[in-house]
Amino acid sequence: MKTSKLLFLVLAAGILTRIVLWCCQSNAAGDDGERYYRESQNLVEYGVFSSEIGTPPSPTAHDLPLWPTTMSGILWLTGSKAITTYIAGIFNLALMCGATFFLLSLLAAPPFNCGTKGKILAAAVLLFSPESIPYSLFYMPDTMALFFLCGALKFFFKGIYVSKKWLIGATLMFSAAVLAKPICLPVSIAFIFSLLLILPTPFLRRCAWVLACLALLTGSMLPWYMRNKQAFGTPGLTTISGTNLYGCNWGWMVNSWPESKRIEALEQNKAIEARAEEFDLMRRSKILGTYAKDQILTHWGDYLLFTIKRHPRLYCGTGTVALFRYLGAEGCCTAITKSTQDGQPSSDFTRRDSVIAWSIQYVSLALLAAIYLIIICGIVSGACAARASGRLFSMASVAFFAALGGMLLLALVIGPITATRYRFIMLPFFALMASFAYFPKRRP
Image 1 (cartoon, rainbow, N blue to C red):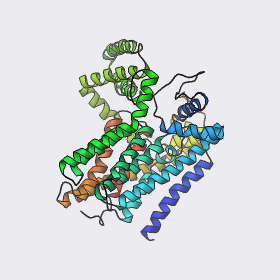
Image 2: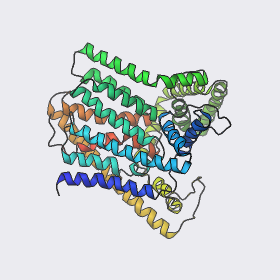
Image 3: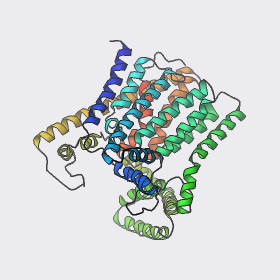
Image 4: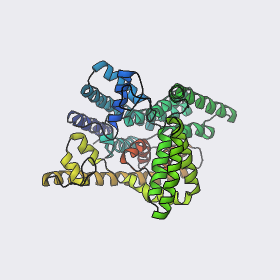
């Protein structure tokens, strides 16, 4: 079979699989879909961005506005939750198609200069990583962030190798990705600063482009900063960064300590929480986040060991339970987790549920293992290609370090928070790295 036909089949299979699943959906909320829907509902009914239930609800800033605002537009037009969530699912499916298009277009151009076989590997990783299927269908912002991130990468390298004007589009795409998911912010800043090294212009012009892109990135998010200033009295992008740093990175580490050490830390936590309660949500998040950061730096050895122990779990989840939950097959979910959706122990599943659930789970695990093997081969092949190019900033080197750097940076940001959903945003970099597993047609 010609490789071009095989690429078409991979793309068609990835899209058709999602269409079939979308038609069979039962519970498309995923981990946090109901919260995002509530935000969109509050926008329509009260004109307030809030995840709270109330009349009227108080403003919140846990999430960023792009996805809830999009859903609120659909809800305003339809007036129906069921129709809104179904349309949100097909909208996410379209965004996944767009992300795949951006990825393949990126691979076809400098610095990747990838042949069709490499594109097949990249498309397969993006579309068929086990977590990719359910998390690209839930009515959550993950797919929107993925779409804008892939578009930003496409425009970013087009700005370097074709016309610098494309860097403006790349920055706007990065901004949109951040306004969908805040985890895209460190990646966006890292790529913008990389212009100091790889943009083929005199150094002062490179500096000017970096400053211009940073100004545009900041300016794109300024309205949301001002909204939070008006709502809370304290400017900021989101409360999730501080609360996650405090509750997850620091909080989980504390709970892993021996009892005497844990009790002492928990007492200190209560004191800082009591102090933070006196302030608005944004200020409270900053206080807790700063405290957590200081404590992590103080106990950096413990935190490093804690992260090393937990982080590998990020790469083990398959998303199979999420997929069964999407389809309403709670018996299959229980067969795998041995617990209900509320986390209570349960044995309420049939032998048929168990056979189906574990068959899919084993297939998912085998697929995940194959993908990781391809990525490892890609890392080795990409490193060899970069070394063979003989220049630090050759196209092969830039392509390899962009894929590897994005992957490692996201791994660092995610740290010990190992929910399978967090791996979804890493898929573009996994796919880019996988494409290096076949690289004979690349130019140095």
